Amino acid sequence: MKKLIGFILMTLLVFSYSAVQADNSGYYVYGDASSATCTTWLVNEQSAVDQSDLSTALDFAAEASWVDGFISGVGAAGVKLKQAKESDIIYEMNVYCKLHPTDQLPDAASQVANDIAK
Image 1: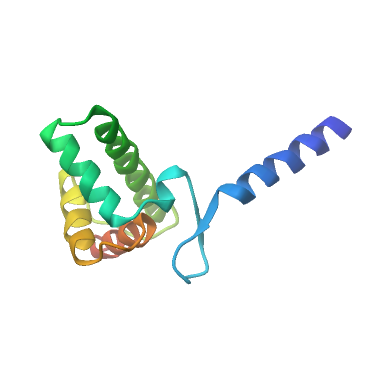
Image 2: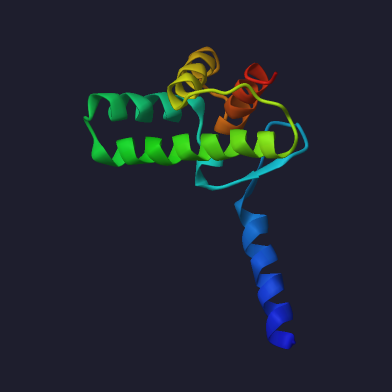
């Protein structure tokens, strides 16, 4: 029983350090990509398109997967979303990020989710 309680406390401690509060909205997001900015998104996306740097292209793949998970979570929470292709989501993220380069990915993903809400 003590091991179980220790495991639970350790898990809560780990998750408490990886949470990032998005803007001042009152919700928290998890994952490495959650602290990336729109500028990072745009640079990494361009590297993926150009195939110029494998490392940043892989970072973009991770960020895009994180955005997919975020938007899927919005849908799972009960928000009705229109069907969108991956390319549509990336396009909408690029549009938002070009206008708001210092915003964090959760803010951009949240806006894209709002844009594709029914």
